[in-house]
Image (cartoon, rainbow, N blue to C red; front, side):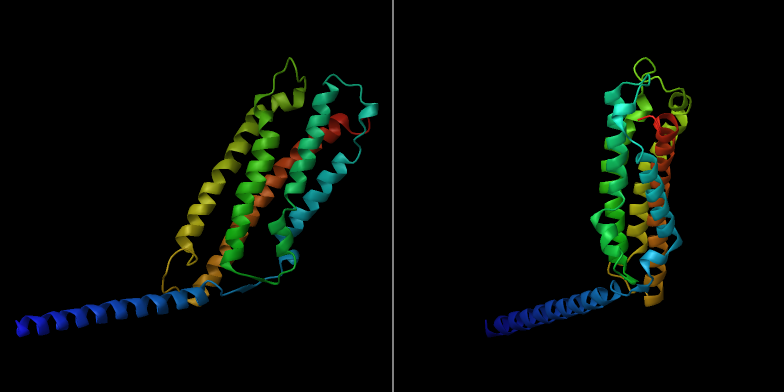
Length: 230
């Protein structure tokens, strides 16, 4: 009986040793992971060409909307519809100045977590709030109630462009998951983390620019059809 007690003790000690070793390895790997994902890319957000281009387009859209005066409108499209388009575009352009973008403007270093937050704001604020909620109706306009030859003639292109924007967020998310140690404990080198941070940043900001280009396209139409008379 004493033999079996000693044998069980040895097994218990061995199990405790294995558990302790595993826990220590897990803690150390997570400590390394914690440091890895905070490897930053020295990058002044405001000076980046993609950010400057975004800001220029935001300014252009606001200029296109600045002539709005409903009291002077006498066109074929109903006053309520014209006013709704204005507010839709206004809401859209404001979404490109969301909290995440504004927080980035004070940074001169970007981490992979910043890239992840930018992608989240693109999906939740730009695509959901702007493209889907405010502009998706352009793909289903009725010529009897919305007699705008220009938009009607470009409806297929608008549908294709919007679908492209909506599909792109899936690609961005998959790419970020596959190429970022933010999600997985890996032995990825610091240089690779910085490369992924840089590439992810340009991908996400490129998506921002594609979306703002579409909003600018609609605002150009709005200005050409109603500018100076509404």
